[in-house]
Image 1 (tube, one colour):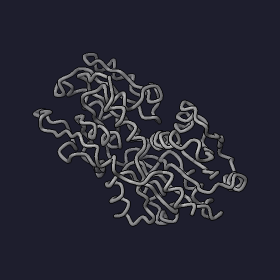
Image 2 (tube, one colour):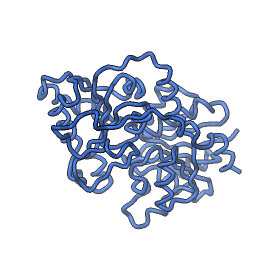
Image 3 (tube, helix red, strand yellow):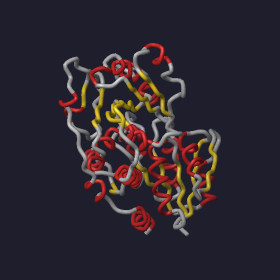
Image 4 (cartoon, helix red, strand yellow):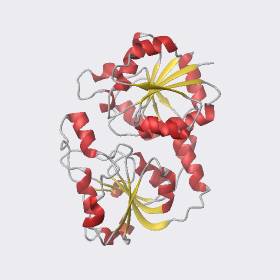
Length: 338
């Protein structure tokens, strides 16, 4: 049986991998390396799949681990929180084991491999996977080689749930959290690198809730957020009914089904919300950062205009492109191992 070594840290790529393993659990021998209590560790513990989980720490010898395991392929999820995936790629190349990096959305493709270091291209894996035409075009424009179009299994699962859901949509707004300050600090050494942070965005929404026709605001924490990060909002904005969602307790698709309007700064969830026909908006203050999520351009706003009307924005419900995109996981592994 083909052995697959995995290193994952962040929640997004881990959830996609869970959807893959559920389909192919018996077809491969899965070995996951992860740091204890990382988002990946927590996601896999909850999933309770037939995966051998190996705990890493700062002293782990990745080369010795892979020499002992002798996998046919090394598959990594990329992360902004640490650079361990780059070490797995480096060691795999040294041992002549094919390496694959899964790029699950469109944000910071170069930074995932060490940019702005001028030698970041040396860190790029032998193959990378993308899950939609927008990701493919972005990776291709950056000159990445050996790009594999892979089916977006996690999104396909969510689409199926949405199409059969019994969850009633409420007149509420869902804000998708992101750790803007942490990402800026980790990637650029300056938590104010983009000139704004997530708290400014959240507070602008709270101060303009009447424009959204609701006083119900749900904030979905990022897997890397501290649980009490936004507790101060409830005392500051007493006229708003605010609920905080723990991403380890509430499935993303359940949140999307329940809420009418989805707002975030950047990130994959805005794309999924648009596909499901929700009103999906990116709110990003004027800065040198651009929203790269492929949602409608008029739904990317820099500030909330007091004259704004929800009818100014577009909605969509079209999943055909995602359903027809890419090859299946088994075909990919067969091609790489061959």
